[in-house]
Length: 85
Image (cartoon, rainbow, N blue to C red; front, side):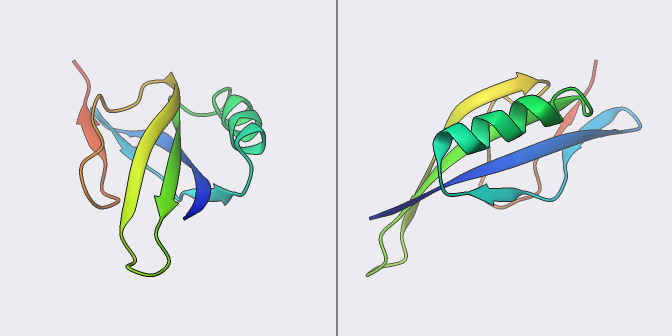
């Protein structure tokens, strides 16, 4: 199994918050540090632990941390958007 940490910043677009370009870190503490820095510039940031089986290509994503506004659930794919009330 291989593990990477994905930092996903979210930006506000009208009445929605949507994902921006994700960044990959190889260490959890690097991902969390980057997310904390970004959280001061954007409405929300998520840190996701992505574990891949190199033989099958199957992966498991787990939300490790969220700062600010992040969707309550991450659907498959990278088009994460939530409406603001």
